[in-house]
Amino acid sequence: MTDDNRPDRTDHAEALESIPSGDEGSDAPERTASGSAAGAAGDADGTVRPDGGSVGVESPFEVVSSVEETRLDKLRKFYDSYIRAPFFIVWTDWRARIGFTIVFTYLLMGIVGPYVIEPTEVGEAGALAKPFENWDYPLGTDQMGRDLLSQVVFSTTEILKMVFAGALATVGVGTMVGAIAGYKGGWVDTVLSSITDIFINLPGFPTVMVLALLLPIGSNPYMVGLLLSIAAWGGLARAIRSQMLTLRSESFVEASRAMGIPSRDIIFKEIVPHLMPFVVINLTNAARRVIFSAVGLYYLGILPFENLNWGITLNQAYQSGAHYRPGALHWFLVPMIAIIVFSIGLILLGQSLDRVFNPRVRARHEKRSGETAADGESDEELTSKVGGV
Image 1 (cartoon, one colour):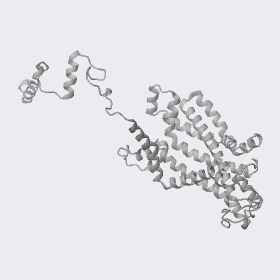
Image 2 (cartoon, helix red, strand yellow; image 1 turned 180 degrees about the horizontal axis):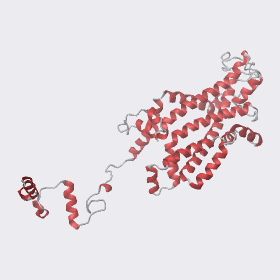
Image 3 (cartoon, helix red, strand yellow; image 1 turned 90 degrees about the horizontal axis):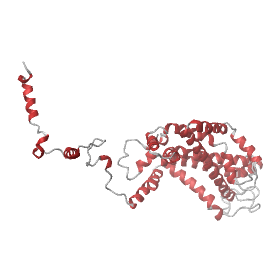
Image 4 (cartoon, rainbow, N blue to C red; image 1 turned 90 degrees about the vertical axis):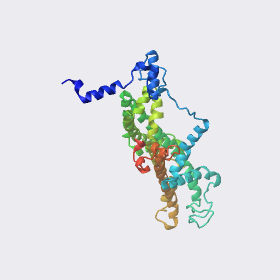
């Protein structure tokens, strides 16, 4: 029995005969839009594109958006990304509201306060006036009749200068050294890691105490801040290097490298922004470390008593026995409360800035990406990953 005698063979042959041949030209049934265009162009000169298409046919890789982004669209996008989204992230978090309020109050007190409140002098008022007893001196006075509010205000100015220099130096050096060591690898990583290990193993505060006694820094607040950052950047550099070792193998880094983008731009424009939540937390931690260390140096009498500082006030109050004298206890408590409240504000500010710099949290709050970011993850789940990685 041959194959032609089978019933299914007959049906299949008839189906094949019903398909029109390529020679029928215009008599052929209408093809699909894409198939017809590709076939017509391909038959025109017989050339086939490497991407599988035909010459003369618009390739999907050559299609660009027909909508041109105007300057107004760019401004609106900038507003959504850098103003609106951070504002809503901060506004929806109670920790952020409290932290920003505290830190802003200290900034206002340290910057504007010296122009509003007169510097205090010895014998200006009665000794050891209690808080809220005389509204000319709402926080009371010390044993020498000096206004404690004025001392707090002028001490805040000096502390802010130390924090500005010390915290930025710590984070800047640590981030730069760690990022370069982790990305470059090889002998660069070996050299930078060895230097980092040397600074990590230095006894931090004792080293600062010795350098403060040896170096002629006086009471310059910026120099004091830089001095306190010498032994503080090593730990951050190690942590940034570890993160960089993971991120340098990501696909977006490989793509940037394939496009010939310089290593400097890849490190500081492509990779480091993903580490900003981690960097910001370390910035606030470095600021608190500068405050505590500076107060400690002044309290121990290592730095000269030339400018007002919370550590100087604590030293004088302790030397006068204010910590066990009920009538003088406010002299000891006022600078301590100022230090504690500022520290709490920096902690809350760091937690809120972690959310602000997290790219996934920002995308959730951006107006234009709000519809596509609803992936079911909460902000807390997103911020639990460092840099969204």
